[in-house]
Length: 153
Image (cartoon, rainbow, N blue to C red):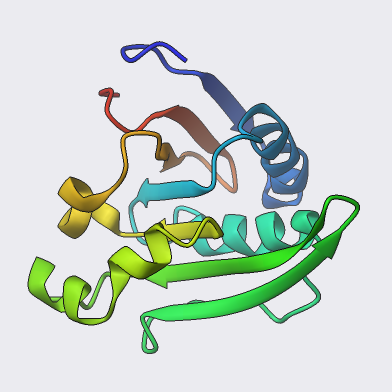
């Protein structure tokens, strides 16, 4: 991936199309495990995380980790089994809080990490983090832009 380019730009007309968008992203980014999910409240980040986990093979109930900060899901698929860590950092007040909760251990685990509201800890994210920007448009339509984290939208 080039540092300054949008890798994928996907427009969906309704949330039911999110599954095919998540499959496309997962297949295109199969060598990456950390995904920073950017977007306004209600843009579809948690719904995307739910679909992403299902595609990976998780049977766990995926919900917003707003109060727990991180939820852990198991998955099993043809390539093996593993963990998915789903973060919602909206309520964290400082980078220090993220460090105290052990965020670096999760990032270094080699497991999938889906991070909503990652702005607080952007300096801790590895260079190969994939950034997905969600933009809510008219009705249920959404625009998803996928870029390497270190580039700009």
